[in-house]
Image (cartoon, rainbow, N blue to C red):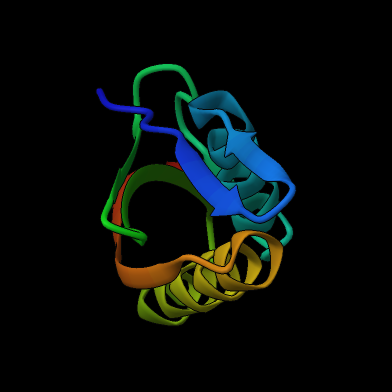
Length: 103
C-alpha cells in the first residue's frame, strides 16, 4: 500500500498535502456515491503521486441491488473530480475493485 503525498512549490513557500489527507479525500469522495463503501481504508486503498499526477486503487463494498458497473463508474468520476478540484493534481486513473456485497 502506498500513500504518497504531494508538495506544491510556490513563491511564498511550499504546501505539503500528506498521503493521509489524500487518502481521506478519496474515501470521502467514494463513499458519497450511494451504495458504495471503501472496504478497508487502511489496506484496500492505494494513492500514488508522481510528477503532479495521481493514480488511485480502491477496494469497495457495494450495497446489494446496486448496478455494479454504474457504481464503479460513479466512484471513478467522484474520486477523480474531488482530487482534481482539491489538489490540482492530474488524475491518471482510478482503479475500482468491488470486493464484497452487503445488504
